[in-house]
Amino acid sequence: MVKYMYYYINSFLVYSVLGFLLESTWYKILSIDSYSGFLFGPFTPVYGFGVLCVLVIERFIIRRISCHKIIKVIISFFIFAILLSLIEMLGGLFLEHCLGIEMWNYTNKAFNIGKYACLELSLVWGSGAIIFIYIVKPFMDRFIKKIPKKATFIFLGILYIDFIASILRYKGIF
Image 1 (cartoon, rainbow, N blue to C red):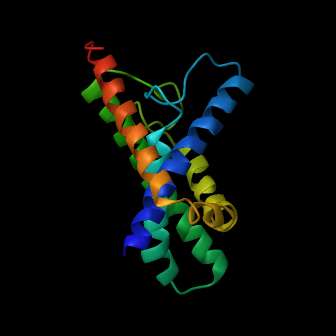
Image 2: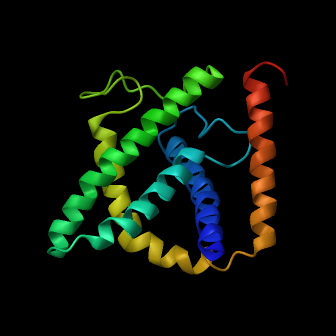
């Protein structure tokens, strides 16, 4: 049980950083003057939470579906597209209502669901989750499983300090 706990914590941390790097690179390529995430450091927790949910759903639900592999991938795509869009929506609502910031707004996108989710990105999230499960995860698991426990605690501490400092900044205290 403890082994899985470290795996999930390290997955959250690694994919929060990788999500930050991916999104920041995307912004640079498109010449968008924006910053990935609300934290000071290189963490974008919405990606970490998204990956955690994908890992749990894949382990406890998707693996138990018995049907042709193509059908399983299609079912997985729709489950993950809905799940990750919901996480994106909840993340946007959290940032808006708890911290008073708006990191993204999809009201100008077709088929938006409020400000924080839209069909266009739902398709990206579903596709990304399929790529993650079948290509990225097997490769990254070898790295994630080797992260020492001390490193896990150090990075959790850094994330905690960053989270507190960022909240204080947005609340005007710091």
